[in-house]
Image (cartoon, rainbow, N blue to C red; front, top):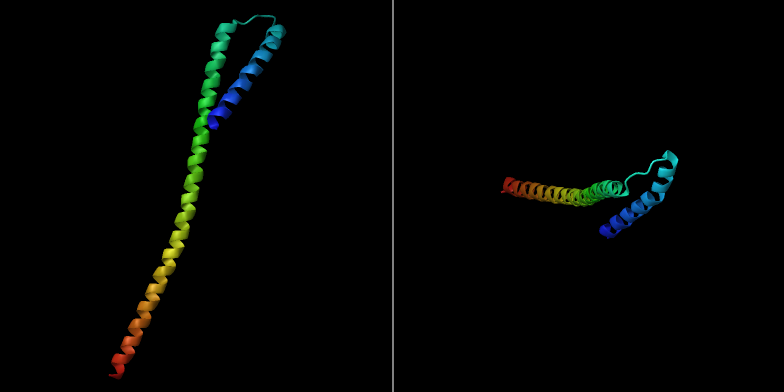
Length: 104
């Protein structure tokens, strides 16, 4: 899907460049070499597309990292509560045994 969005963006930028090249040439009164400018624009569009792809992938990784952090927080709270229950059970057991040993 991101490849399709990238192609659509590239196509829109290329179309925009083609439409505005005529306006630019008429406004400055000079004709730019279309072959060279086309190569330059294509290379710029390729660089922009690769930067965009990199940023989108980085955002995906950040979202995944945030989800794993949430899972970690939930597990941390759960394991802490299990630990507290185990310590409480151990304390109650020791107190009960101590009281029986006191009476014996």
